[in-house]
Amino acid sequence: MPAFLRVWAALPPLLCLLAGSIPAHAQPGNTQPVNTQPGNTQPTQWSLERFDARLTYYNQRGRGGQSQANVNTHNPNQVPRGKEDTWIVQPILSARVRQNRNVTHDIMVPVDIVTAASPDALDAVSSASRTNEAVTFQMQSNIDLDEDETLVVRYGIHVEEPLRSAFAGLGFTQELAQDNAAITASAQVIGDSFDDLEIDGSNVGTAGRVTLGANLAFSQMLSYTTLAAIEYGATLQSGRLEQTWNSVPTSTNGAPADRIAEQFPSQRLRHALGTRVVQHLPTLNAFLNGSYRFYTDTFGIHAHTLQARWTQILGGAQGNPRWSLRGSYRIHRQTGADFFSPVVQTSNIPNTRTADSDLATFTAHETGLRIRHRFTRRATTTHRSTHPFGATPAIRHRPVPTKTGYIDLGLSQYWRTNNLNVTTLTTGYGHSF
Amino acid sequence: MPKPLIATVLLLLTLPACVVVPAYARESFADPNMTGEDDITEAQSQRKLHTSREAASGADGRPSGGGCGCTN
Image (cartoon, rainbow over all chains, first blue to last red; front, side):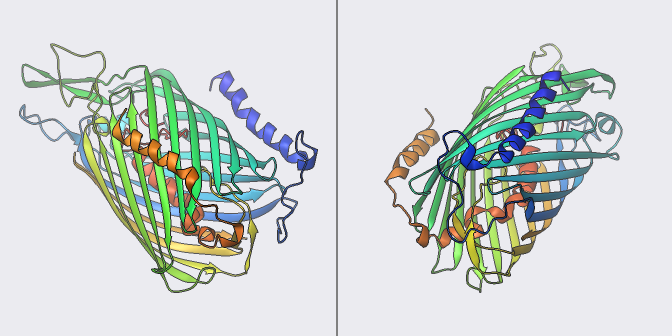
């Protein structure tokens, strides 16, 4: 990892611990102690506030031009596509730890155990038989500066067989209009260092890339039962952006030839604009959640993503044990990258090229069903929280039940129009103390 | 300027005109279905599904892994 990344990664924990050691009323410009409202029972010392665990299984079937595994055909009239079959088991652990009245830490550790068709170059050449493991440690520290202002520090690392990544970011949330609205601005940097694997599986050294990002989010209560949010993010990537072991099929005078490595531009600027509305429907005892996202980048990819979720509460008033059933549908439509081509001619090989089906033009559909049981053990009190790991700020100072928890089971089906299907089975458990 | 962007900006401009909900009337907002607090790990799983398969997903300031710079 480059030296500047190590220094950057070390700064947020120091800043956070420093802020946590200073009483809020002693901080410059802060004339009010925080969390003095009646009913506030937040402890002043280290304590575990909540814990979540999830186990997800993905089963993927499909083919893509970038994969060399078990290519379907050498017929010149057909596009050669390798297998993308894989399955992934992903356990996730998450916890919120309170350091004192003003500082909380959200910790998340997802682990991916993958049998790889195309992620591992050696597997791609031979067969989809190997296993990869990837682990991420990410932490978000929320520092309440006063009643309406929160400083958010994010940092973490990601390690897997060919890749080492570190990231850090800063954010600031300002609540407005008697906590009816909140605005968050954040910025982050991600540094990746990875093995420079060729398409034949040989390792020729290391390569890297840096990603800089900035996000602006605004959320507001639109009515007594409606919450809305809007978010914009810009991201600039520089370095080796391609997956070095991905290949592009070639053709000579219409006959299949060899494969060459894919090649991306060395920079990419991305823009994403999203909106979200959550509507409580008391008469139906249900919640409707809708979101839309528009995306564009300098690769020439444009995308629209629409999602709707209906959560039906099955008996039980708020704060009491109850079951809920949620149905969801998502559609994602994107145009391909300007340099995408399933096959390139050997007589005219472009400087930038890819056959990766993830960068092609396609439409993806996803349907899901989830059943959840929620349990509660104590009456309501006042609670402060920010939205963990999300740029969208949540409204705080809400009365919520304490000592609550849930257990759920979900099933979803994802399918793309360019030959990819994923079945997902997930189960989760959570508990707040 | 793309039409979705215009529509979103117009939506944003309407937000400040909305009602102020007093603290005692926020029963709906106390429900985890409004805040998504119980969906932290589920959102992480779904993000993994989408960022690994869609070049237009991600761009939210978090690492995606997979050795590919498509989705950071």
